[in-house]
Amino acid sequence: MTAKARILLIDDESLVRDELGGLLEDEGYEVICGSDGHEGLELFRQEQPDMVITDVRIPRSDGLSLAMAIRELSPATPVTIITGHGSEQMAIKALRAGVTDFLKKPVRLDDLASALLRMETARLIPHREPANLPSSAHLVEHCWTYELQNDLDAIPSFVDVVLSTCTSGFPRQGILELSLALRELLLNALEHGNLGLTYEEKTTALDEGTLDEMLAKRGSRPPFANRRARVVTRRGDEHLVVEIIDEGNGFDWRALPDPTDVDHLLEGHGRGVLLARMSVDKLEYNDKGNKVTIRKRFKGDR
Image 1 (spheres, rainbow, N blue to C red):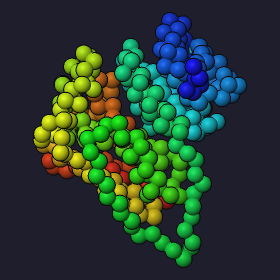
Image 2: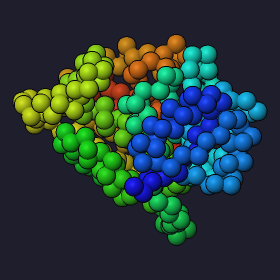
Image 3: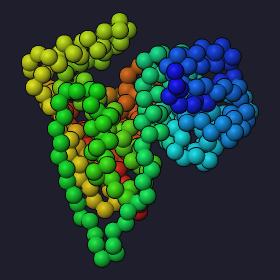
Image 4: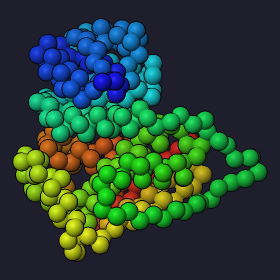
């Protein structure tokens, strides 16, 4: 079987390298292992892997320093860090520094699969040279409106098309951050909004391995079957505003825990909202809780 991509895995515990490396190889990835920060950076230079997974606490340079060094060498290479209790603040710093995702110990297979999908998304976003308007032209605003059925599998390609339409000339890193934010927020809009799935129901379904079955059954019956998510994008010359509106009953977003609070960072839910908040300049809900609006600045917009 041809490997999907080459992953550099850095952890000072041989058991973690063996177990996590084995899981990655079972998924079709080629795995290169290192045990500390210096070795990890040297392996990155020599092997030029497609993606990196590193523990946040490793000898001879911590995982955050390693991630930042890798981003300096190759800004397009996605990095995920592994963290545990006691290293939450470092995980927040890593996300703000541009790390793609984080995994909490012990690593769950579902969380690993989600992190791999995010990194694959980041890796495959094409590099486009910015296209500049003539000095005599000035874009005030351009608007696109879409509707999406409750098709979770369509989210990645849908987001790719939306962003390819409205982000010409924007930096690649900004497009990547928007892509991650939109995927997470659309998943929430379909699962928890249109399909009415509660966090408690999702937790139980994940533990029992019945999430796909539950979503398919709920999506096939009224009132859920006829619901849609509307996505409105408004582009100015130096910013993009995106609204995602679902047809669910809404929720009390004021009761959401602060996702950057270390007491909540490693909880099982909320990572999508955290990643979205870290990826954009502004994120807010309407009073009902069925519309989320994000804003992303580019160039010199203040």
